[in-house]
Amino acid sequence: MNWSIDELQNTWQLVSRLHDGQKYGGPKKGEQIEYINHIGSVTFEILKAIEHTPGMNARLAVSCALLHDSIEDTPFSYEQVKELFGVEIADGVMALTKNDALEGKQAKMTDSLKRIKAQPREVWAVKLADRICNLYAPPYYWNNDKKLAYIEEAKLILSELKEGNAYLAKRLEEKIEAYRQFLSD
Image (cartoon, rainbow, N blue to C red; front, side, top):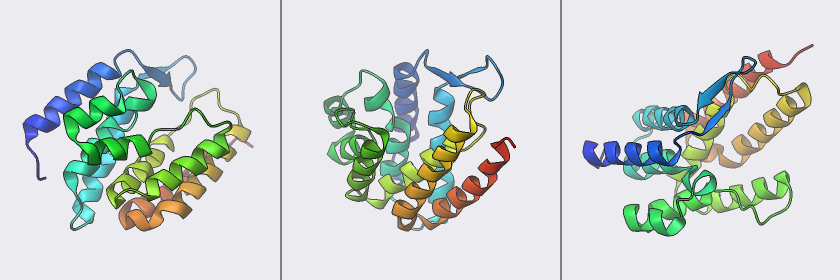
């Protein structure tokens, strides 16, 4: 990586504080998982992708992975990301942030994918990694319709961003197929 371990540790501390107390539903009834686990999982996918992708800008990819939900899910702003990490990382994180001014899930996804595709391929990779991580066991309360819609959305992400990172595209394709195990008869 072309950045220091201190920068990585400081960024991890920042996102740990930003997401402190946030949880999501686990696969077992009543289970709550610390949200920082999702941030770590996306970052782990990116670290592995870096091994398989010559010339990948590790600082951009890892920083965007760590910060990908910070604008969307915390009080942290684009301006704060820009001040601490620079415009390239801030623009990447902003592209990964849903535009809540838009109505409807489909409109938000279409807009998000368009903005991501205007960014360097490392940002595409973060979106691929994010969806890979979201295709582990779904929350216990999701029904089949929700799971099937999630599969279709994952296929759209794969279709739009597969050129961004061959390794992660293959991982996402495998995760989509494996996710079918969570559908009930």
